[in-house]
Amino acid sequence: MEAKKRIFSGIQPSGELTLGSYMGAIKNWVALQDEYDCLYCIVDMHAITVRQVPADLRRRSVAQLAQYIACGLDPEKNIMFIQSHVPQHAELSWVLGCYTQFGELSRMTQFKDKAKKHADNITAGLFTYPVLMASDILLYQSDLVPVGDDQRQHVELCRDIATRFNNWFPDTFTIPEAFVPKMGARVMSLGQPENKMSKSEPDGCVFLMDKPEDIMRKFKRAVTDCETAVRYDPENKPGISNLLTIYCAATGKTMDEAEADFEGKGYGIFKPAVGEAVVELLRPIQAEATRLMADKAYLESVYTQGAQRAQALANRTLRKVYKKVGFVPAK
Ligand code: TYM
Image (cartoon, rainbow, N blue to C red; front, side, top):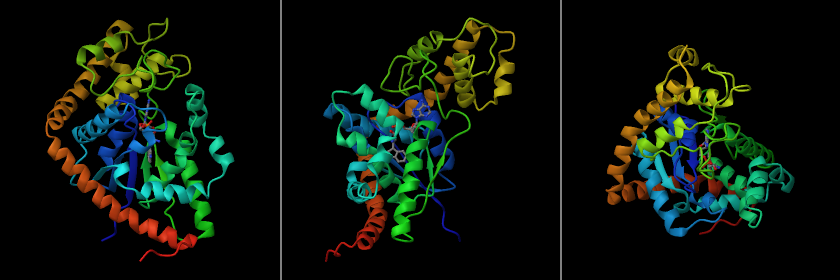
C-alpha cells in the first residue's frame, strides 16, 4: 500500500480562533484528514513573537486544542500537539536560519506589517519567524500545507529554503506545497472589508466562540455600500462580496446559488441571513468545545500523546540534518 502523503499546519494561540482561521484553514484540515497523514499544531512559539500575557497564552493554547477537536479533527487520526512540547522545531530552526538570507526575510510582507504595528518591539524573533515556520513544515517532510492566502508567501519561502538546502545536501527535505481553499482563503473584516479579518483587530472580527447575539450584531453592522443588489463583485462591492463568500463557506452553497437566494432582496434581509448561517455553523462547534474544556485530563492526554508521536518523526529529520551539516553524532 502506498504511504499517505503528509500534511502539516498550525495556528498561533495569540488570540481566540476566528472565523477567518476556520474558513481559511481548519475547515480544510477537517476535509483532508482521511486522505492524508496530518499533524495539526498549536504554534505557541510563534505567538511570543509579539508580547503575550503568559496566563492567557497558556489558557488559549489548551482552548485551541479543544476547538480543533470540536471543529471535527479526530485526535485518533491526526497528530495534534503544542509546538513548544517538541524541541526539534527550535533546533531545526537554528540550522535553517543559517541557510536563509537576511534579504529574503526582509521581503516578507507580514514582517513589514507587524513591524509597523509593533514599532516599539521589533524583535529578532519577529524577523526570523518564517524560518521557524519553515522548520515546522520541513521537520515532518510535509507534502501539503493547508493555509489561508496570507500565509502563501511564507510557504513559498519555505520551499526556497528547502530547495537550496537540498542543493547543498541532496535528498534532505520534501518540497511542500501550499493548499489554499477556493472559497474562504481570505475572509475580510466586517468593519473594514478592504482589510483581512484578524484577531489583532477585534472590530469586524468574528470569533469562533462568540455568542450568537454578538455574531448577529456584528453581521447586522457589517459595512456594505450604497447600492441594493446582493452581487459578487470584490472590486466594487468588497463588503457584500465578503459576506457572500462567508455565506457560501458557511452553507456549502456556490456563489450562483447564494446570489439567487438573495435576488431582489435588500441588505436588510441579506446581512442577518449571513449572521444566522454563521450562528448555525458555529453552534455545534461551540457546544462541543465547551464540553471538552471541562475535561482537562482528556485534552492533556491528547497533547501529550501528540507530542510523543511528533517527536519521533521530528527526530528522524533532525538527525539527518545534523549529520548532513557536519555535527558529530551524540552517543
Ligand atoms: P495564523 O495563526 O495567523 O492563522 C492561522 C491560519 O488561518 C488563516 N487565516 C485566514 N484565512 C482566511 N481569512 C482570514 N481572515 C484568515 N486569518 C487567518 C491563515 O492563513 C492560517 O492558515 N504563521 C502561521 C502559523 C504557522 C503555520 C506553520 C502554518 C506557524 N507554522 C506551519 C502552516 C504551517 C500564522 O501566523 O497563521
